[in-house]
Image (cartoon, rainbow, N blue to C red; front, top):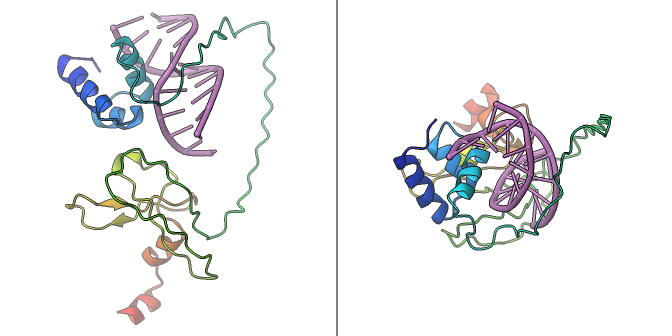
Length: 172
DNA sequence: CCCTGATTCGC
DNA sequence: GCGAATCAGG
């Protein structure tokens, strides 16, 4: 993909609007997040509020050779994540809506579907893709929870989506 | 682990 | 100039 004027302009705009590099990359299409960041730097339009400080790094002089690469992979495949929906503090950058930060009492059994209200572009492999609201509406979002790699939804929504036929009939 | 931006450097 | 790899931080 080339950086024609249109794309560069869009990049500038989105970057100015505070979108993250990955989100911009998603909208531009055909480029990676790194490409966007690289371009942003080349355009000299880095700083934007206060993302991550630039601690004058200088440690990157030939990292190759010399050191024998000893791969040590200590994989910890622990699935100790219960069905409890993590009240993970979302670090949303845009404050479009007055999200009430109420704590939910860890009720036993029932899992409350706390939606993270993610935008389509910020869904990843491990985010619940259960849609919230009207897709045509402004405040449409996705659940965003999830952790299981067994499906597209979080535990709660999986139960709703993959309801047994019998139960479904009963609910109907 | 997920994510963010920052920097370096081979192409 | 480009962007993957890497680094550093949340």
